[in-house]
Image (cartoon, rainbow, N blue to C red):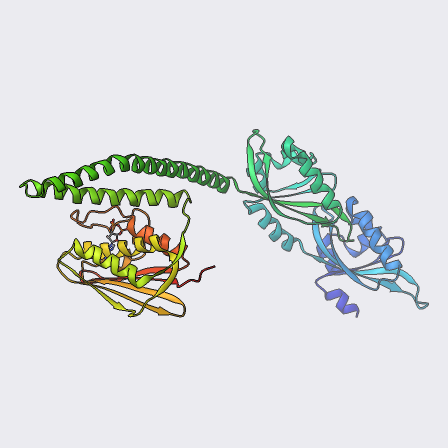
Length: 471
Ligand code: ADP
């Protein structure tokens, strides 16, 4: 037993109940610098810093009350006056009558371990500091110096309110109250003030600190600088607001312009119709007819733009009714075929009637858009096939053409507002809103629309919507 004490790398120290050292091993000499002759018979205060006396007394009381053995960490001083961090295992020493006559202690030097923690704290970019329960600063790392601009020497012993802006004093009081109640305050965003008076946005975590005897002594504070993130967020909000404003201007402009264009166009269209009637055999009739075609294009463009602005303004109301989709399809096909002789429109699929409960006008609009596109983007004569079927209560429609097709990477984008395929020749006039409107119409009806294509060969546009049931 004696040799274990002699060769242990830990200090093994015994003391009596009055605190006088009764035994001191070679490691105690190595760690604290006092020889056994110098230490034995002396009071423990030889190696005990003043601030640890009360704490040590608590432990002795616990031993007296019968606690067999326990561990704690503390601070001790060496012969040369320097301090070391120590780990302690303490146990009572009893006499033959089982009476406690002192304590024995195994003491380890854990300064290296503490040095590692200290290095972590000191190299952290976060401000890490501590304060007493009343809010007086007790530690202040390098991160805190950088974040708040105060040197450690300037703040130790000062009140934490030094960095709390007036508007946050109440917050700080409530933090202290929570800490006194032993509660940890999870990270929250707040503001503190630097030495130069500027504000810093931080994410703050405050936790209670307990000493070795389990007594609540203060709070640890970890503050992360979130200024940059806040600035980016603020900028993003600004951009979004600006963008929304610009979008509003544009939408208002489109709505106004389309509305104002509609009336004169209707008048011109009527006049052209009258002219056409009166010029049946006139050689200039072709000019009138060509003007009529251009006017029709303009009218449909304006109708599209008005639709878009209504969609943007959320002013769309669906007018549900029961109708035969087959008839609607025939009408659309005949109507578009009459003005296009190059391509042949073929209807496939459903032979019998197909009752749909939907907004007829919108579905007609949807079909017209898809078939017009199929015609427009098929410059060489080809077949346009419209195939419809019913599956699981869903109407499924496919419009296939043998036209110019489009690259796969464009397939999703073409349904976006004002989007036209990159590099599309200017001979294909358009506004890029037709498919956007199709997308919206299908969405309003609770369906899905998508496209497939092979560049230079064909395109297929699909959609499905529920057949629907009245009421
Ligand atoms: P646009 O008025 O330009 O035709 P759309 O919204 O109807 O606007 O179509 C968006 C884009 O999708 C078109 O500009 C065109 O590039 C492409 N597109 C649409 N339909 C077809 C099709 N059937 N074949 C090839 N490309 C098409």
